[in-house]
Amino acid sequence: MSSHIGVEKLKESIRGQTPLDFQVSGISIQYAVVCKRELWFYLHGVDINRDNPHIATGSAVDSQFYKDAQTEVIHGMIAPDILEDGRIVEVKPSSNKTDGPKMQLLYYIWFFKEIFGEEKEGVLAYPQERKREPVSLTKDNEEDVKNLIDTIWEIYSQKSPPPFEQKPVCSSCAYKDFCQVGGNYE
Image 1 (tube, helix red, strand yellow):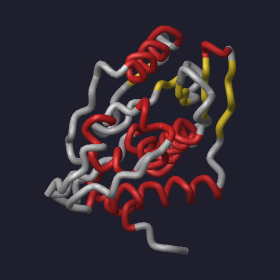
Image 2 (tube, helix red, strand yellow):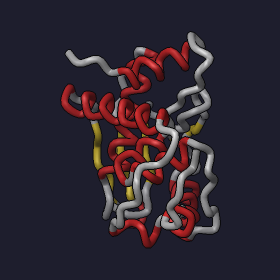
Image 3 (cartoon, one colour):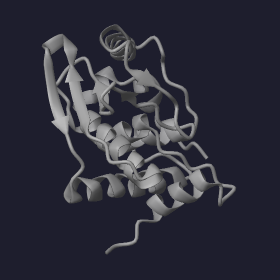
Image 4 (spheres, helix red, strand yellow):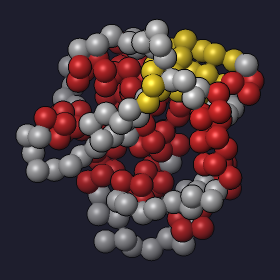
């Protein structure tokens, strides 16, 4: 079994065993899947363009279709929507890009298992498409979650962001204008 330093640092931070405030949010999981540079900006407190239409659309869909779900910020880092039956739901406007949202949901399920000892199931919901996808934590995707947490730890520990890489998602990224400028951020 490999050592997962990021996972251990996260658990130490949650337990208050370190002065380090290493947190892994659902957004950081998505950014780790989509773009490591975007992740670095987020982890280092570089605020996004909140007027970005992609951010506004995602927030509107979540609040419009699942307003009855219970949402609570847990340990200051995750805010999963929990359905009445106990399942965790992640609401997204489109099923076009599912890797990030699915990993975010798997992280929430893993978090409940690892931190609280609670087994949860999940649902990826795309209400505008009238589509729902059940999501369960398996040994394989649990390892994927741990590896992503380790990646987030590595990016968090870097003094400057990874180099810019042009990707298809760049045109809709909230960090677009800032990110492409480049430079050293120490």
